[in-house]
Length: 376
Image 1 (cartoon, one colour):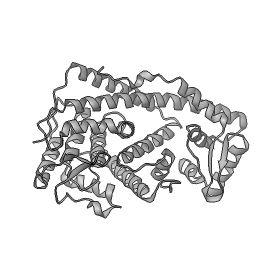
Image 2 (spheres, helix red, strand yellow):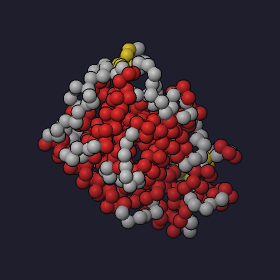
Image 3 (cartoon, helix red, strand yellow):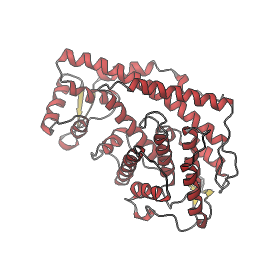
Image 4 (cartoon, one colour):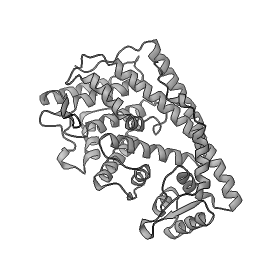
């Protein structure tokens, strides 16, 4: 027996409709390719990676998460954090490939393969293998056990049941809800020694992508969950009640996930507008100063408070050599748009006050109601 999907009530259906409308708006605005769309997608991937790994205690700055996503060594992240970010990057790259499968299906082997990719840097986690004993989730701050997974002998049967439910979807169940229930059931089964949370979020992203719920990059909830980790833990605590209790009503979880999708969708739509506005401002600045168009990516990243390095700038710009990148960054510094910090290999660039002011003006115009609780 797994957690069963509750029948949505009128309030939940209304919120789901609002989410779908937001996703349609986002897709419509992304339909006509713009140069800044790549920047928007890159930032979304970096935020998702940072969010998912922060839940597990691997904390990285956004610019380090972006660097790892681009295959560049981070500046500050520890080696453990770098490995976690790489595992997440590779697993989500595989999710992107799986989403395009013309005959999609789910299997226990698929879940174990994703787990191997995600956790392969830590062999103690038994990547790609089910756990071999009982498992307990500890709250180290309070020194108490908050959850005990189902008996180890039940794990293969429960995973098979989850896989069957995904391969035989209920017509009345939306992709949003199906992905949410896949997340809940996998994290509660806790089939692996480690990495269960990351795997549950990875599975949710895969189901969302395969169900065509919005854009595959912007459909992720991992940034939201990373920013609201305690609320995430709290609702999972309610669902688990200390141990495996699939008879519990999953409605609190569904409402939590719907709220997360609505808030994240509003944030993504706002970011799209802000990025477009920022890019237009930077285009005018570049034209006035006769700067190459390719430098706009570096300026846009710096304007958002991130560090720009030669290697990360090259990752954003096709066919640019190390020497060419250095030349561009010196030119932006001479123009008073970037400020260099450090020397040689450790050098990076931050936004000058002129760029920072552009971003601050946009932040000041944000509507705090985008984070309102839709069920209040």
